[in-house]
Amino acid sequence: MICESDTIAAIATPLSSSGIGIIRVSGEESIALVDKIYRGRRSLNDYNANTINYGHIVDQNGEVVDEVLVSVFRTPHSYTGEDSVEINCHGGIFILRKVLDLVYNTGIRPAEPGEFSKRAFLNGRMDLSEAESVMDLISSGSEASYKNSIRQLSGFLKKKVVKLRSEIIHEAAFVEAALDDPEHYELDGFDDKLVIELNRWISEIKDLSDSYHEGSLIKDGIDTVISGRPNVGKSSLMNFLSGHDKAIVTDIPGTTRDIIEERVVIGDIVLNLIDTAGIRQTSDKVESIGVEKAIKAQSYAQLNLYLVDSSMKLSDIDQKYLSSFDPSSTIILLNKSDLDSIVDMDDIHHFFDGHVVEFSTKTGQGLDQLKSAVSDLFFDGNLDSDRFYITSEQNYNDLNDALKSLELVRSSIANGLSEDFFTSDLYDAYRSLGYIIGEEVEEDLVNKVFSDFCMGK
Ligand code: GDP
Image (cartoon, rainbow, N blue to C red; front, side, top):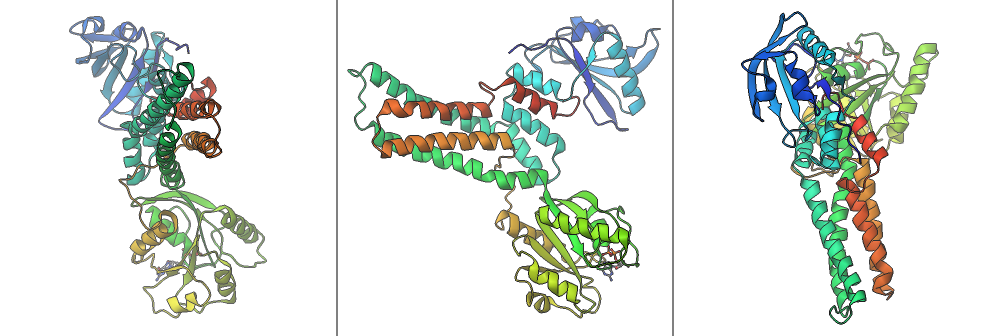
């Protein structure tokens, strides 16, 4: 694979008014080019690697634009593995943009999204699963997702995969050696030994791949529909969970005309909330569109939060919907439980055999019970932020491919087939696992992974 070595730059910190903002520059000429706009005690070219140096960034007229600290890194000891410079400017969008313009004027080009990490990968500074976890880290919402990315970044998956691969290739190589040189290598009893190893590999890989479903819920969130009749408190719930007023809250039934989406984090759980118009038959044209959308959204959402107003009698519509909901993906919130209640849990359980939570968007009552109900439905009741979860679909597919190949080996042995027949399946498993850590990975996959990244990473 050929790595482009031209010099690239981007702002690596969020574009906001913060204490400092960092511009990252990487490539063969990064130190010499940034030196053109740097004034310090010495030329940047003369500073040692891994040093932070005080100075100023100046414009074409020699006017000082910002007082800066410039870090100098030399290949291969940098994030990308190339010569790199990081300019620590005073935060603020204006100054950062101005310095970045000066950087571009020296002939350095803007980095593509994810290009720094792509170079780090191509230069062997990180493997593909680590690179993907940089992306997760950038977008991680909850504590659990953050911890998982850190764990991945520290190479947990890589270590596991490297170990599995070396064990697999060891056995395959032994078969090759024995077939080539039967005088020195004995295959008698080998199959029995191999089956023991196979069972262990399969169970370790299965543990990883089984974590994918929960891992993707942690990372991407649970698509959640908030539904219920008009005025039960859907918009209030959305506002309560998201902590600010986004949906319109009023006392007039049916004001939530369209679907509003919001990503909220409650503890370790991320919910992608879809607020919908009340579910009811209506002659109001706009509202009826909302109702259609609500029903449609419910069919693709993973979680249905159905609100019932506990201070009012259950309506026929409530009864009809309650008995039709799937308890494995529905939680009933008995809202307004701060008021005198007319409907209680037993009334609901009469129609619905699943999680019911007494809730109040006014007082916050029921939030912990809601969290544990979500955890029960989606994480078998134990959302474990210390467990490692697979979060990449590509990793998941590669693990499953490796599993299939190893299962083929196991059934070949069970069917009494000879060793030379199943070594190719061992190689296939080895290759599939290799994709996870970026060995023999195809260029288009690399491009796909890295184009998903943020600028400056
Ligand atoms: P929606 O039509 O389902 O979106 O309902 P809204 O969120 O607009 O709420 C309708 C009315 O119920 C508003 O006046 C809210 O302030 C009120 N409301 C919502 N949740 C609660 C609650 O938990 N307790 C009480 N007492 N009132 C609530």
